[in-house]
Image 1 (cartoon, helix red, strand yellow):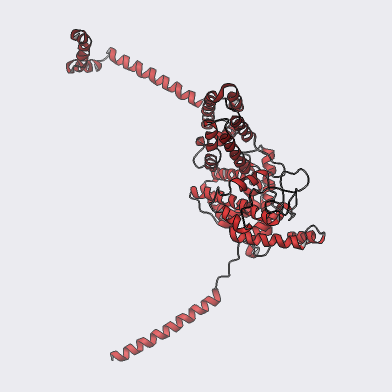
Image 2: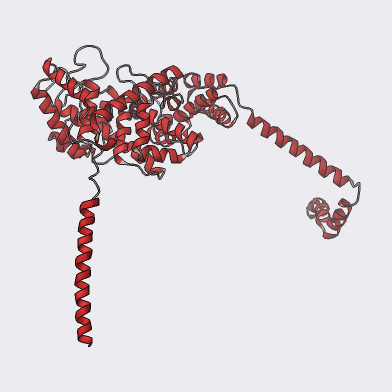
Length: 291
Length: 197
C-alpha cells in the first residue's frame, strides 16, 4: 500500500514540475519585460537635425573624413578608459566646436580647439589633474602613451601631443576635464548622502563644463531652499525632471540670480537650457521617450 | 605681622560665619528689606544691558557699508600691513554675519552670501553646496598667503586659487568673466602674494 502511494506521489511530483515549468515558459514569452533602452544612445548624433548638420559639414569640406575618423576613434578610446558615455563626449565636442579642432588657432579668442578649452582649464589639467581622483595622470599616460603635460594651445606645433590642437590630446584633455566636473559634483552629493543616477550626473557635468560648477550648485541650492532636499534627489535621479529643465528656459534663472544680476542670469539660463536640450537631442536614446 | 593679617581676615570670617549668613538670609525674606531692592535693581540693570547687547547684534550694518569695507580690504593691507588687514577682515566678518542673520533685503543677503562664499564659508549653512567647495579650493590657499605674504610659495598658492575660482565660476568661455566679488578677492590675494608689508 505504502509502495503504491509513494509511486503516485512521485508521479504527481513530476506532473506538477512539468506544469509549473510550462507555465513559467509561457509567462516568460508572453510577458517578458521589454529590454530597457540604454540612456545614452550607442550611435550618435541621434537627432536628425544634428545628422543633417554633420552631413552639411562634410559636404562643404569643413570636416574631412580623416579628421572625423580620428575624432571618433579618440572619443571611443577615451570614453572606454574614463568611463564616459562615448556619445556624450562626442556630442559635447560637436556642440562646442562643430568638430573644428583648429578653432581659435588664429585670432584673439580666449578658448581653443575641440572642447573650447581656456587658460584655466589647461592649468587644472597641467597642475591639478589628480584633484578629484588619484588616477587622472595614469589615464592620461594610458591614452596618450606618455605624460605630455604641460598641454597648451600651441599653434606653432599643432600636431605635437602637447598641443591642444592635436586631436587625441584635445579629446583626452576634454574627457579628463569633463570627468573632473562629474567627480566633483558626485563627491558633493555623496557628502550630503544624496544618491544619484550616474547617467543624469553626466548631464550635470556637461552643464558644469559649459556654465561652471558654481551655476549648477546654486541651482541646486535654490531648488533645495524652495522645495526641500527631496527636490534635489528627484533632480539627480528622475530623467523626467531633467527633461522639464531642458524644456523650460527660465528654470535655471532663480539659481543663477544668486550669483549674477537678473539680466545676465536670465541669459545664462537660456543658454544652458539650449545647451542641455542640444546635448540631450544628440546623445540620448529616443526609444520609449527615455530622455 | 600676624595682627596685621588678622585685621583683614577677621571681618571676612565674620561675614562668612554661619550665624551671620543665617541672619542675612532671614533679613532678605523680610518684607521691604533693603536686600530685596538691591537684588531687583542689580538684576534689572544686568537684564537691560543684556537686552541692549542682543539688540545690537540684530542691527545689521547697511549693505553699502559692508560692500565698502569689502572693497577696502586690499587698501587696508597696502596701508597697514597684515595686522591691520586681519583686523579689517574680522570686522567685515562680523558685519557679514549680522547681515546674514538679520531680516535684510534679498539683495543684501545675496551680497553677504557671495562675500561669505569667497571669504567666510563657515558662515554659510552646512547644507549649502558652495561651503564645501570654498573650504577646499580657496580658503586653505588664503590662509597660506596670509601666513607668509609676498613669498614665492604664496604666489604659487595664489595661482592655484585663481585657477580654481575661474574653473569653478566662469560661465562663458568666449567672453570669460567672473563676479565682482570673486574679482575683488583675487585682487586682494594677488596684492598680498606679491607684496610683503
